[in-house]
Amino acid sequence: MIDRFRPAEDYLSRIRGIPLLPGERVARVFSLQDGLLDEPTKRGRLLITTNLRILFFQNSRGYDEVFLFPVGELKGVVVDSRMKGTLSLLWGILAVTVASLFYLLAAYWVTGRVESPALPGLNMDFLPFIILAATLAGAWLFWRRNIKRAGGKVTLRGANWDLSFAYLGAERVRDINAMVETLFICRQGCIERLYSQPERETAPSGYP
Image (cartoon, rainbow, N blue to C red; front, side, top):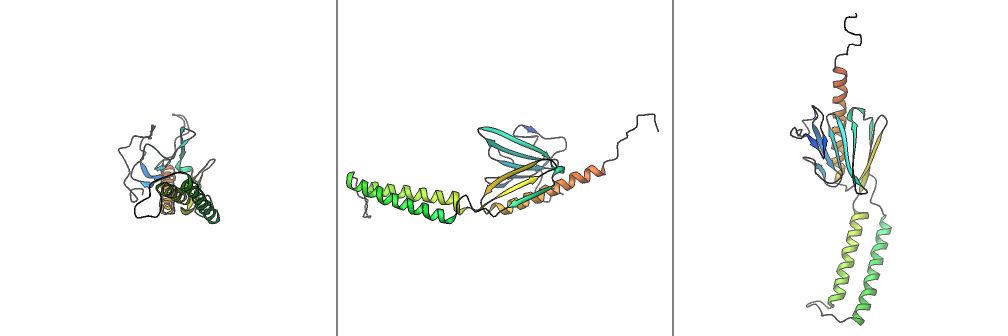
């Protein structure tokens, strides 16, 4: 059932030092930075589902952390895609306004005190131009990181565990949905294998 989404990477024997169990195959790999991937990477935050387990890799305070959960214990998934960055649009406009005022004051101060060559074709000296370019670049990066890019939060809930992580980028919503679908398919496969196994004998040998 997993194979109709993507081919399982049978050649993998371990992921970032974590050995795979006998008969375990990777079903899907999701990077919080890059979305769905064909195979696990050595760096970055990864959510991986196999036909047996859920693996989550992250780096916290300079240390690599890995969380391992049986996929058969997955009870539910909550996907909240209403987040719109860490700041509101009003704060973004205010930040751009402050950046513009900073440029005007800095350029006025530099023009009267520091001599710099004029740029050909522009009625502007070199130093004020550098300040303008740096201000625009800073405002664009601020906008892209905190406001423009939509984001969301995903919570995986198990029998006695929770796993939550945030992601950025509206383009990741489709990847998240595909990952959730694969998680439940793997979970269903684990449950079916569990109930299809023959019951073990509980009485000692030689007893009826």
